[in-house]
Each structure stands twice: as structure tokens, then as C-alpha cells.
Length: 72
Image (cartoon, rainbow, N blue to C red; front, top):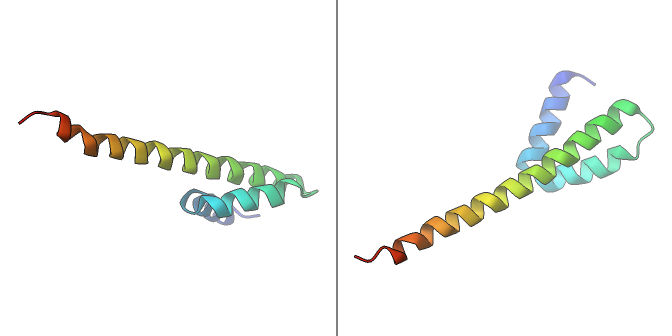
């Protein structure tokens, strides 16, 4: 598999985490070692993207509530 296709799959996994998780689960069960490695990386990238989006969402929520506590 070419490097460009790998990058495309990793970007897809980051921006559409569900697709990365599904792709990772399917390809981790493949007999080809290269596909297993790509699947594992897609799975990790998908999970990291979900965790990162949750952290950013909680941070944005916290910063939007902070002005209520400033006391004008």
C-alpha cells in the first residue's frame, strides 16, 4: 500500500473517528501484516480523535461558564 493511501486513511480516521475504528477492527483481523499494522494505527488514531474532541468540548464548556463567576 502506498504512503499516500496510508495518509488518507489516517486522516479519515482522525476526522471521521467512527470510520477509523471500524476500519481498524476489520483490518486488524486480516492475515496481511501490513493491513494489520495500518488497522491498528487507524484504530488508535480514531480513539485519540474521540478523546481529544471530548477534552476540547469539556474545555469549551468550562470556559463558557467562567464569565458567570467573574462578578461584574
